[in-house]
Length: 81
View 1 (spheres, rainbow, N blue to C red):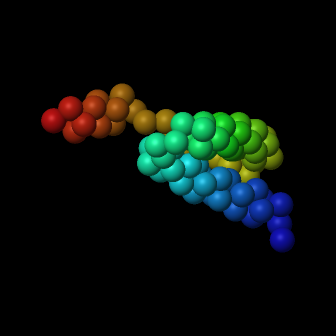
View 2 (cartoon, rainbow, N blue to C red; view 1 turned 90 degrees about the vertical axis):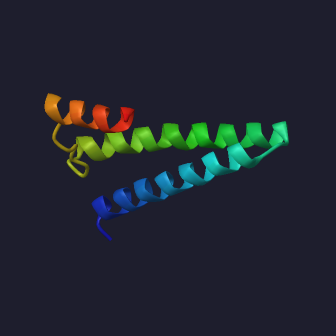
View 3 (cartoon, rainbow, N blue to C red; view 1 turned 45 degrees about the horizontal axis):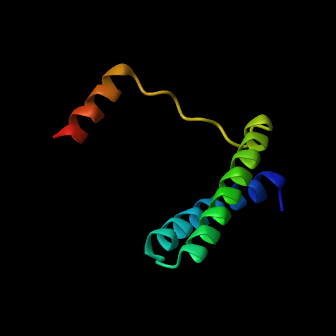
């Protein structure tokens, strides 16, 4: 399997895991367990960022074009309604 495919697959898996940790954190009443989930989430976020930097440096991940000022204003208007 190609390295690019593996890296992108891992990044996708991490995103999914982060969403699940967020759900678990908000639904957990036990503070010790909640802290464990928060620590795991923080570790995953750090790992995701390091892997993203590697992917970007190798050209595996290309950032989308920046939004124009008009696009930003349109989204702000839609959100503030």
